[in-house]
Length: 44
Image (cartoon, rainbow, N blue to C red; front, side):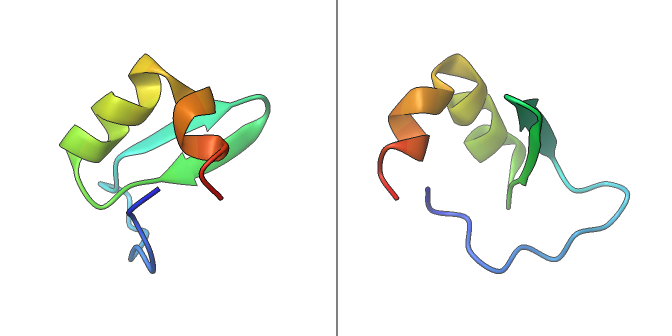
């Protein structure tokens, strides 16, 4: 996933997947992740 060192605030885009919260640098990154989380999590 491309979002590294995201400054987390109350407005930071976020998604919860399998009980874990993920934070994103932009709404676009969040939307892409939401479409297919497993695609991004296997990139680690």
